[in-house]
Length: 123
Image (cartoon, rainbow, N blue to C red):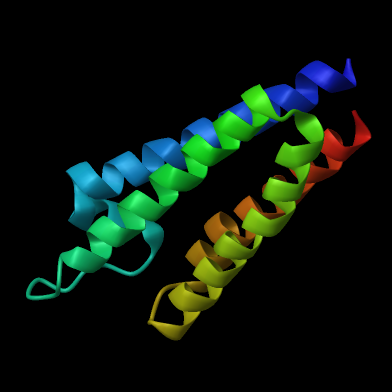
């Protein structure tokens, strides 16, 4: 029972971050607004593209680890990657975003990623 749950949550999280990365590449301004720090109209779009590539790469690496290296490697990956949404929460707070977005989206995501790591370590 624990193994399908651990693998399922990891796959969902990896696919979700891959989706978010794709969204930053396709509709960067909408994605930035959903992130919690809207892009400036005259801002540099390169940074939005960087965010999309970073998130997409994390999703692909996570899926590859799970498929080719197994649960233990994915667990370590999730443990380290949990730092990203924690950092995102700080970025949102430092750049005028709401506490609801910082904690309700980014901090909550970090908690779920850490839960996924714990489940993967347990299998």
